[in-house]
Length: 193
Image 1 (tube, rainbow, N blue to C red):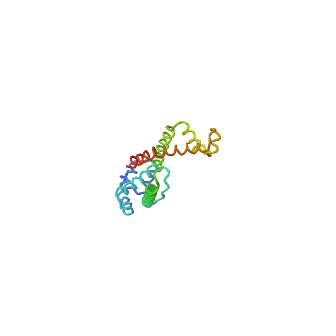
Image 2: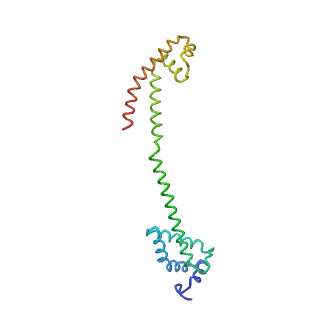
Image 3: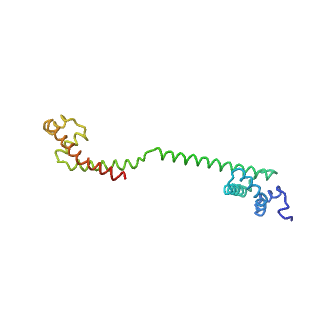
């Protein structure tokens, strides 16, 4: 039998289809340099050209039993390398656009989580200060602010005058303004640094 390097492409293809690993190696060695050069000319990157070449030869071996190449092995390999390079370029383009969109989103969108955490902390602080109000003042204030009742409705429920309700709400607001004014300032100072 003749050595593999003396065989034609068609004879090597026939051996490859039957699973001959040596025929596959001969095809690889016969075409690797020209195909690598072909890929490099398209993308101008040695590693990416090598990746394209490896991908083409891996597919060639994986599909060896179902290959429908005909008689032009070199044309098939050149087309495969070109298509692989085009696929790599398309993937890089998609990756680039995806990364750009993520960066644009990160630069333009506010950090909602941070704002929500601060909002929740401030809400807890306000709730603590409301809970520290005298019981009657707290009850009137919560009916006014949380239950959204008018002074007249609160007065009717508690059996007191509207003026008393108004004074209780006003007193609660003064206490909260004094206590929360300092806390809000400190909260802002320590959480924005």
